[in-house]
Each structure stands twice: as C-alpha cells, then as structure tokens.
Length: 158
Image (tube, rainbow, N blue to C red; front, side, top):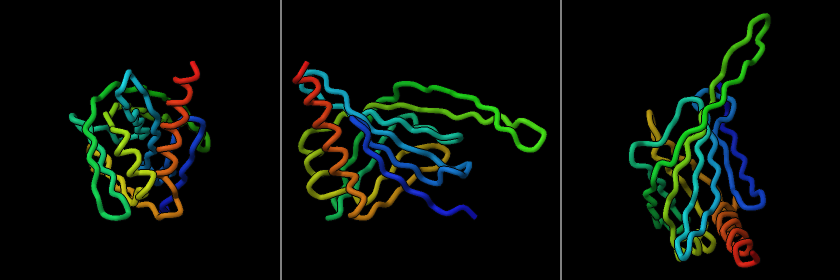
C-alpha cells in the first residue's frame, strides 16, 4: 500500500503540491498567475496519468474558518509526454498528461487565502473528484498570495 505523500513548493512565481506521486492515481497541481489589465487568473496545471478536468473545470478552496471559495474556469489545453521505463528486460511505456485551466480570481479571495489559510482543496476531475487536505503549517494560502505578488511586481517593473 502506498502512503500519501505531500509536498508543497513555491518556486519564483508558482506553487505546487503532489498527492500519491508514486501511484497510478497520483497527481500533482501547479498554480501560477496571469494578470491581464485588472483581471487576475489562477492558471492551474493538473499533471496525472489518468485524471483530467471535468468539462467545466472548478476548484473549491476551504479556509481554516470553514469558508468555501469556488472558482469556475476555462479549459485551456493538454500536453502529453510519453516515457519508457526499464523494468527488468522490458521497457514499460508511461504516458503523463498535463491539463491546464484558467480560473478568474479576485484580490479579495487571494487575501482570504493569505489571512485564513487553505485547509482543503477539491479539484473537479474525472473519473473521480480529488480532495486534498492541508494543515496550518503548510502555508499554501500564504504561498499563493506570495506568488501572485511576485507576478504583479514583475509586471510593474516591466
């Protein structure tokens, strides 16, 4: 039985986490921001062997005080990568897909993430919806706000 593995990373202007990375039902999420005029978009990349976004992508964020913030997005596209993994004397093909969707988000919602923290995320995927719980030490809400701020600063410095 595989145990649940979680890593939350912030790199420059993106935030990511993984769930069950060594299993066939494992996946990872990578969040970044795009700012167009006064509009903010959360770009969410789902990387998985078997999961993909539903026809109308959504993500639910639950803060530590119980507030649920629902984002509805637009599916952008899919990238597919195939890799051959040697197992004994044979090569096993593994195909990994990266699905991207953009979700409009407000500055007020980002500030709630920063101030209240994110306790749980539900990603609307098929064939099964995925939930991921976090504890207050993970700091995912702060990391998302920080990535947004860095993106905003880069635009202002341009």
